[in-house]
Every structure is written in structure tokens, then in C-alpha cells.
Length: 192
Ligand code: HEM
Figure 1 (cartoon, rainbow, N blue to C red):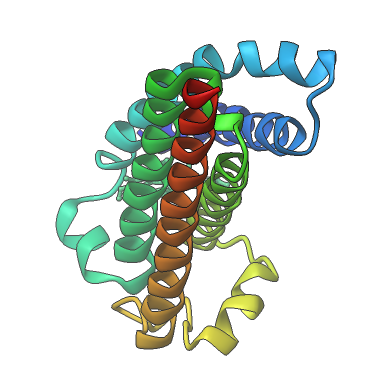
Figure 2: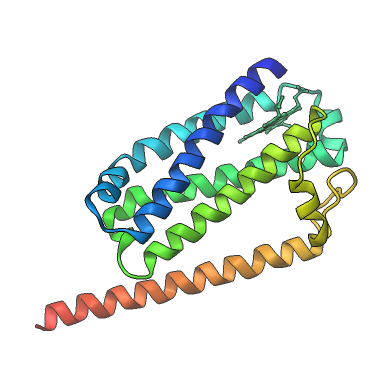
């Protein structure tokens, strides 16, 4: 199954990286090209999610469960893959249900923040996958100051959890701010 996993992971990685660029572009631009790219976002995120789920399912069949769940790299690779999929599913559902309203006011920065966080999680997932096959990358050096030693840290370190918590609170704050801004705008339209 290893060969299938290696082939399959290329799809979510490529699609989610493309989606990140599309989201960042749309966040900073209201131009015709940015709007055209945005129209492709829901299909892009849908195929990304489906291929991510396929890569995940096949990933579970590569090594025996006892092996993958008892090594720090295997366990963290699986954990980060779950977070990555959850983040990109959240982005898809948000864009799908909210439509173009996600680009109103501050909401666009929430989208950009989620996309950057989703890419960071995807990058760490891929890095840990690379380590599982013996390919070293410098991303692991960047994780070290966060208290994360990829070969030995079995659980997500406290400092990393705190950093995730701070970013989550910031994103929620940004979301509340954006929603208040939208309601204020809708209120002023209906009053006039
Ligand atoms: C979004 C989901 C996932 C992504 C993007 C991903 C990504 C990767 C990458 C980039 C590699 C290195 C491949 C190579 O360079 O040869 C890898 C390897 C690996 N991944 Fe994943 N992975 C995902 C989910 C999972 C899950 C859920 C598991 C289950 C434990 C898993 C288990 C493995 C294993 C065991 C290897 C080593 C394969 C080998 O021995 O050749 N992956 N993964």
C-alpha cells in the first residue's frame, strides 16, 4: 500500500496548495481574475478533500496499526493528517454555505488565516511523512523551538498546543468582529 499512499498524497498536497494561493489572492484582490479564481474554489476544495480522505484511508493501511500508533512520527503524522483534513473541510463548508459573503470586510482575513493554518498543518503532515521514509527536511528544525522533536515527541508539546490555542482564539475573535461588522452594514442598508 505504500506506493499507493505516495501517489495519492500528491493530489491533496497540490490541490490544497493551489487553493491557498487562490484564497490569498482573493483576500487581497477584488479584481476580475481573483473573482474568476474564486468561482473555482468550491470544486477545487471538494476534490482536494476527497483526495485527502483517499490518501488518509490508504495511509492507514501502509504500516500495521501497532507500528504506526506506537512511534512518535507515525502517530504525529496521523494526528496532523486528521487536523489538516478537518481544517480544509471547514474551509470548504464555510465557502460553500456562506458563498461570496466570505470575502466581505474582515471575513476575508479569516479565510486567509484558515488557509495559511491549513497549509502549515499540511506542510508538517508531509514533513513527517517524509521522515517516515527517511527524507529529512528543515521544517523539523523550525519545529524544534516550539518544543517539537519529530523523532521523539510523542504528544503535541504544550507550547505548540498553546500556539494553536492562541491562533484559534484570534480566528474566533476575527470571526466575531467580521460578523458584527456585517450586521452593522446590513443594519445601515435597511435603515436607509
Ligand atoms: C492528508 C493526509 C496525508 C498526507 C498529505 C500524507 C503525506 C505523506 C507523505 C508526503 C509521505 C512521504 C511519501 C514519500 O516521500 O515517499 C507519507 C508517508 C507515509 N504516510 Fe502519509 N499522509 C497522509 C495521511 C496518512 C495517514 C492517515 C497515515 C496513517 C498512519 C499515513 C501513513 C504514512 C506512512 C506509514 C508513510 C510511510 C510510507 C512508506 O513506508 O513508504 N499517512 N505520507
